[in-house]
Each structure stands twice: as C-alpha cells, then as structure tokens.
Amino acid sequence: MHYITLDSDTDFNGWRKAARTLALNQVKPADVTWTVQGSEPELFAAPRDALPPETPEGRFSVSARFVDLAKSAILHRDPERFSQLYGVLWRLRGNHDLLQVATDPDVARLQALSKTVHRDQHKMKAFVRFREIGREPKSRYVAWFEPDHHIVEATAPFFARRFADMAWSILTPEVCAHWDGHAVSITPGVPKSQAPTQDRLEETWLTYYASIFNPARLKTKAMQSEMPKKYWKNLPEAALIRPLIEQAERLSGAMIAAEATEPKRSQRREAPMTRPVHADRDSVEALRDQASHCRACELWKDATQTVFGEGPQRASVMMVGEQPGDTEDLAGKPFVGPAGQMLDRALAEAGIDRGKVYVTNAVKHFKFVPRGKFRLHQKPNSAEIKACRPWYEREKASVRPELVVAMGATAAQSVLGKTVPITRSRGYIIKLDDGTHVLVTVHPSYLLRLPDEQARAREYARFVEDLRIVAEHLGKAARAA
Image (cartoon, rainbow, N blue to C red; front, side):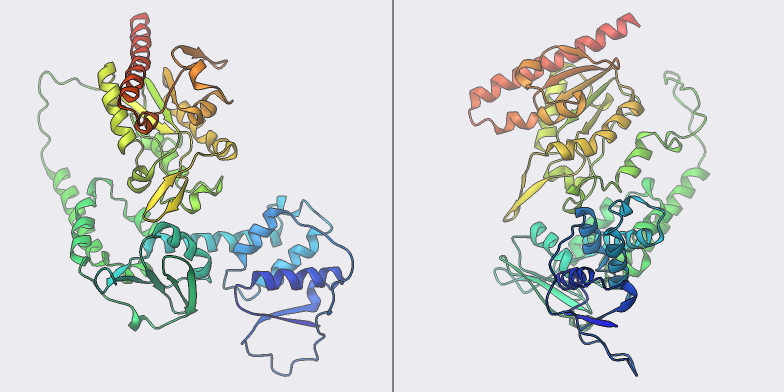
C-alpha cells in the first residue's frame, strides 16, 4: 500500500506530481491511500510503501478539461476526492474519451463535486459583506464568511480584481485571505468573534437595500434558493428580509382585495391572455432565468452577473451591442450607462420609441481588466462570441423582430455569423438566408471614445442617419401590412 501525504487540503500540485509518478509506476488506485499533512494516522496501520523516489521514463497526457475538473473538485471537503481523482486519471490512460461519458459513475461523481464547489464560490462572491475598520486613509475592509468547501484561496483573486483599490480581509474559520493592494496573502482561520459587527456605513447600506427591494418581483422560493437562510446570519440586510417579505405579502393582499377600477372609455381593451408570457420556456423571461446560470465560457467567473436582453416580448426592432459595460454589469440591465444614454438620444432623434425596442448584447458577461478602482473594458474574442451566440439566436426566435440592428464589430459577427468590416457594411439593409433583415452600424461607445468634438458630432449625425433607415424600413413594413 502506498501512503501519500499532501501538504494541504488544496495541494493540487502535490496531488498531480504524486499521481503522475504512481501512474507511471503502474500503481493501481486500490493500492494508494491519500491523506493530508496533520491528519491522524490510522490506528494499527499496516506498513506502507514509500512513493517511488524517481519517475520512470515515459509520459502521458490528459485533457485540459480534466485538469480544470480536478482543480475544482480537489477543493471539495469529500475526504475521498483525492482517490476518486486518481481513479479517473488511471482510467483516462486507457480511455481518452472517458469524460465524454456523462453516465459514468466516476465521471458523474467528479462533476458533482466540481459543480458544488463552483456554487460555493458563487455564494462567496454574492454574500461577502465588507465592513470598514478605522477611517481613511488607514481604513481596512473586513468581512466574515463560512464556506462549505476549501474555496477561499481559489476565490480570493476575484475580490482582488473587483476591489483592487482597497485593503481588505475575508475571515473564515479555516483560512483568511488578505489584500494589501499588491498581493493576496493567506493566514490561518479565526473565530467569528474577531469579525466586525457593524460600521459607519451600515445604516446607509440598509436604507439602500430597503429602497431597491421590489415587492412586485418577489419570488420567495427562488430568493431562498439563491440565498439560503444559512447565509442570512452574516448579512447586514438579513434583519430586513423578513419584514420586507411580510410587507410585500400585505401589499399584494391589499391589491387583490381592492375593488377593480373602471377603465376609461378611451382605453384600448386588449384581448385576454390565456397564460402569462413567462410560462413559456422560450419567453424572454424564461430565457433570462436560464442564461443566469450560463457557464459556456469563462467570463462568468469575474462578472457580477449575467446581463440579458430587455424589452417587449414582441418587438419590431432588436438592437444588439457588444457586451455589458461596468454600469450594466452592476445594474444587471443592458444599455443603462453612458453608451445607453447616447443610444436613447439617437433613437429619439430618429423617431424610434426606445420602449418598443428590444436591446441586448452579443456577449452577456462583462469582460474587463482591473486598473486600480476601475474596470477597463476588454473586447470579447471569437470563442466567447461563439459561446454566447445561441442566446442571441433564442432571443431573436422569441422576440421575432422585423429588423435586427448590429451595433459594432462584435455584434455584427454574432448576428451575421462572420467577421465583417463596419465601414463597408453599414448604411443599408442586409437580408440573410433565413429571411432576417439586418442593419449594421457603429456602437454608441465608439462615439464616446472619439477625442475630437467635431468628429464626435459628425459621427453621431451618421449614427442617427443609420437609425433613420431603421425607422423608414419599419414604416414601409407597416404600410405594406
């Protein structure tokens, strides 16, 4: 029996080195026992063979997919995870396509471990609440969190990027992560008594949270699913949740009990709907819920949330941009930042009602690089555009627009399925093989980046002219109908 001792619960490099040596020495998974340094040895343990001191000649490779799976699964608390990983590695040597077999018990077990770890990391990103200790310029922000798995060290870089301009510490019972503006450091865990209970901004945060709580969109079961009660004890706003829910229930009950008001004579009577729109799994609302869990590319790891399209369920115009910006990433809505304000102004000048337009982006997560307190926009690559294109296709099928406006090169690549030069493609209606009508133009953010005032005014006028083509096309379509 070979007894392998790893340096820590998250010692992936140690596990990989030992697993490679064991496999090349033809040591079967059943002949290996894995443990972590500091763990108590088994009572009356049998004599153990040492790991072969040298790796024999030879080599083998595994896919990047297995490496990623192993890096996340090893963060799970399951004490059998090291042996489970080695068991799959052993089998991969003879079956390179093993990970494609989703029904295989060993593969399914590892994927379940990885999924649980990713969910725990998502909860940490969502429910860490920093409190200020001291006053500027010597202030520090401290948070308390209780993870289910060994995720702190792996998740800390997210907070370093997100809060690069402030010194912070995340305290947990197992290990603590600290950021000094230059590097992340990890120290042993501490008891909760060392975590701060409140700060000078507490009242401001509670007032803000109460003001953004929308009772009209309250879904208690979904809320508890995304924010289980075990996290409430560490959230400042937890004390407000129950009263806000009860208030929402009272308001809803009062609205139901109130007598219906008589509609005005001039009010248009709509045909009654047989079922709510969101009951359809392909409605915009249903697609938005599905997209919130999208992991088709890596952008979700650093973004705050998925920013899906928004607008009428049936819209004549569908406008597609590149990706959400910093403002959109925080708000969860498309085109609400400076570029969105530019778009609103241009639509109004072109005679198009923004309220009747469906707006979305080719890529649904914000891609950026941190620079101090700022997050600088980064252009999505072809793989990220391709990974997100199915969402655009489903949005288009759901909204059924008469015309799609592709704003910018990324949007044009998603809508047309190929890279096209904006300068040669803009200004006229393109009809695709599937019957879709498309207009290509620049992205509003392009206008904001122009340094010269005259150039900005000239290009803005061209942008408005492109939108007037949209209005003219819709007018012809309406008259033809």
